[in-house]
Image 1 (cartoon, helix red, strand yellow):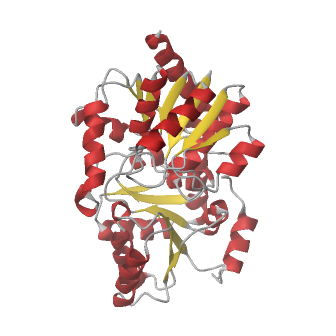
Image 2 (cartoon, helix red, strand yellow):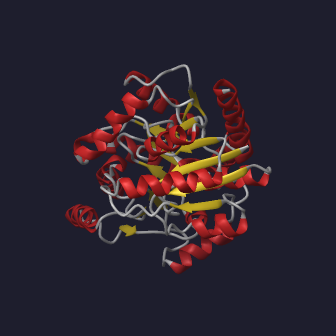
Length: 379
C-alpha cells in the first residue's frame, strides 16, 4: 500500500505532527510506501523521517494563504509522481487539500480529525470558515478518522457522516516515554529545581483552548497551602500571549514559583522531572498526547475533562471540570499528599494503562484495517 499524508508542517512541537511521524515510520517499517506532503517546509521532523526511516517528504512550498493556482498545480504534480493508493489529510486545511489531491488523482481520501469541540470566539473568521467548508465537503472522503470519541461526537453533531467515521486513539512510543529517574534528576539540575521541590508541569502551547489562565489561578490557590510547589508551563506561543500570561503571574505574586519555557528537545526528561503533569484545556482537545506520554513515564496526571482525557487517564489520575481552578488545585494537592506506597502504585498503574491500550503497534494495526476497508469500498 502507498499512502500520501498531507499536513501543514512537520514541526516537532506539535502533538499531531509527532503522531503522524510515528505512524509514518511504523507503516514504512512494515514495507508500505509512505510520503508526507507538507504545505510549509522546514519542520524539525522532516530530516529524520526522510533520512532514517525512508519516508518521502513532498515540500509543496505554499507561499501564503492566497497562493492558489501555482500551489495547486505543483501539489498535483508532486502527488502524481508519488502515485499513492490513498491520500490522508491531517487536520483542517490539510484535509481539504487531501480531498482535492485525491479527486485529481482519482484516489480515495481519508481525513484526520484531531480536535473535539470548537470555540471560534478567540480565533480568526478564516479558521471558522475552513471548518464550515469541511462540514460541506465531509460527505466525499472514503474514510474519516478521529483520534477521540469526543471529536467524533462533536463532528457528527455538526453534520459529518457517521457511516465512514471511525475512532483510532493515538499511539504512545513506549520505548521513548518510560520511567527514568536519572534523566529527571539531571533535568532538575540543569534548571535549578531542587530535588525536594514538588514540580507541576503543563506541556501545552500558548493557545486559548489550553486555558493557561486556569493553570495560573490553580497555581495561586495551591501556593496558599503549599508554597514549596513549583510550576512550569512548557509550550510555544506568541509574544503577546506570553506577555499577557506573564502579567497574570505577576499580579498573582507567583513570579518566583511559575515559569514559562518555550520548548524542550527531550520532553521525556521533563516528564520524569515532574511530580504531576497537568492539562487545563477548556475545549478543542482530541486525544491529549501529553497525558499519554507522561503516564507512559509513570507520572501522576491531573486534567480537565476535555476531549478524551477521561478515557486516557481512567482510574490512574484525576479529572476535574473545565475552567474550575479550585477543583484542579484540590486534585494537585490530593496527589501531592499521597503516601509513597500509594503514589508508586498509581504511577505503576498509569504506565500499565498506556501499555495495554495506547501503544504504537495497536495504532498502526487499527489504522491499516481502516485503510484497507476504505480501499475495498472504493474499488
